[in-house]
Length: 64
View (tube, rainbow, N blue to C red):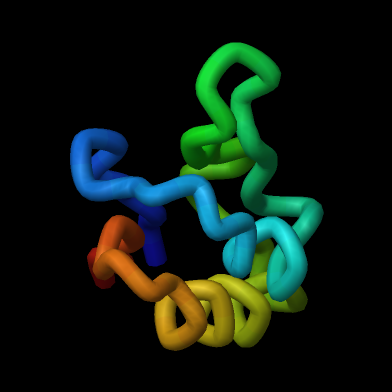
């Protein structure tokens, strides 16, 4: 699995950070998503899927 984000769609809600803090953060400059790990470990895959589902703007993409 590989994480991609479309930063231009991000609204800075922070739901990804709440669901997967080891994978996502928010920029101090603009509050938009920052990917900490593009390839999550097998333990973090569930958290990545939860973040995808919680994102209100559809910013997160998970590629196989």
